[in-house]
Image (cartoon, rainbow, N blue to C red; front, side, top):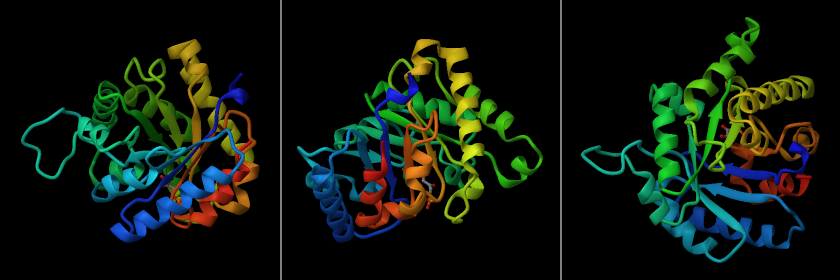
Length: 252
Ligand code: 13P
């Protein structure tokens, strides 16, 4: 059944670009996605200050807008933060949560990520929730255990029923040009699927599980056809329209 799930190709622009470059990249991705014969769902996630401008460029087209983080609370005295409702108001449909860069740099725990995921769902946003092991954890043979614990702690009860999306991003594969072997990716995605089905039943079968970490035009087709891989979360290669669109065209 999982093979029939509609793939998601999402670009995480991280902390890059200017208003002008964000508009230009969004316009190129929109034009390319319109031309591509793809059934994949396409999402781009610019930095917060560029969201409204990119929303205008994407309006009425096939590319959805996402953000890279939100606060767990709907409003309040939280200097520098943004709420899920604010993102929805800017035209976002998705929000990346629990990215390893936020877990590491902002000390986000599974509990914090869970609160943010709940807030996103309450605001009508689709979370793209990230999990993944470090190099040391993989070397110690703990990769699956670490990811299963992250899933248990980060996913609110309604996550799968409400259409939440998962992203498996091994920390050591992000921005490094290194990826797990195809067998390692397939094994981890199978483990995630088992955990989702055990906890969420039918809804767990319908949840998209993306792979992220050094996805490039050259390896995208091989990764995207692996069992239980339902799309990709792309960092560096999403900053170049041609590279991102080549990955999109590789989606089954
Ligand atoms: P890279 O594609 O640059 O490795 O980044 C992956 C990532 O962190 C996407 O969220």
